[in-house]
Length: 413
Image 1: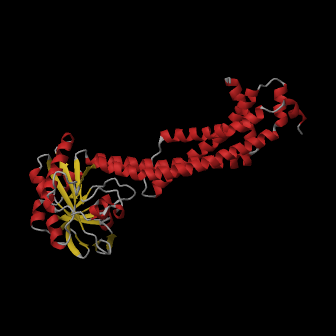
Image 2 (image 1 turned 90 degrees about the vertical axis):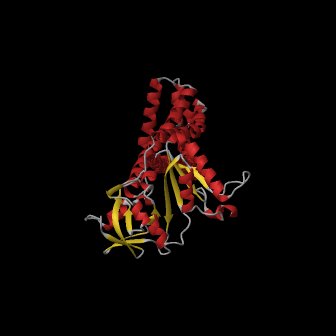
Image 3 (image 1 turned 90 degrees about the horizontal axis):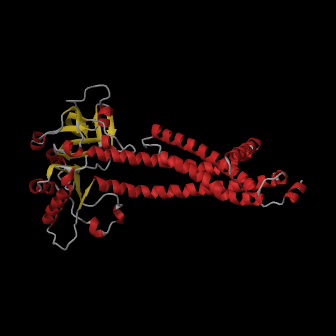
């Protein structure tokens, strides 16, 4: 097909659309919905992925985590042998620091979960359900998160069990919107603490709790909640190059402390930020699957609609087809005319779906905690799918039109 023929076919196609605006709009609705779903969901998932990647990059590439089990699996689905594992303790943290030369900093985080939800208060202001945990001064180094105002917990605070606290950015903003928070006394679950620091703001995923926490010295935490034994342990390796060595050293210390034989499997989990990202990607795969199913249904409905309107168009334009054949149009000319018309119709639906999807993604990002980023690759792919659907579903009407007998067409009323 020449460029001139393509141009003429597009003119005929858009002329048909203008003549039947409502019918054309209803036809492309299925394609529009399918493409809209793809772009909207992809925008949110891409936003999640980028946000998670930025958080992991902010930690650096030399953090090792030690926990009872790897995160990401629903507890009820674990075998009993994993559910009944012994938790990680403060003594494990001390042993690792002493015996692992590749580890330079340790941040044990022992959390307390109030049955009624943790509450932090200052005068008549309060914030509900912040994380509440005890930790060590190395928390800043390991988590690459530092105070913006005041100071962090120090060794003296831990040793003398000082009733001091450092809060996340959101907690500081909620309790002290218009005043200096340093030196103020706050209540956390009824216990009084002097506020010594407010952490800098960190990027969050879907409104996560990265900025909603109250941290106190580990010694103080053990004094208030001696019943809490298990903790989350984060460790900092000397450098990214020494990560394999650090993991081996930590694993060896933990196996020795657990008294495991050489042929026994680990009854603890040692993992890195990359493992956390892999777990997150496994979770999002289910969302991708649902998105593809919904989008495919929408595109198939749109394809059936395109086929239907093209069959109607062939019937309505039978005499026109006969005249074109009578003056020399070949089968391939008729075939391409109707195929281009179908692809143009579906392409319009694809473009509208892309625009609506981008708008919905930006609206979600602006009005909710969910991040949203537009993926140019998926925009192009969605448009390709919309045109490909028309090509597949438009073949039958185009072949039917091309195969009509010109004499019979001229007799058609």
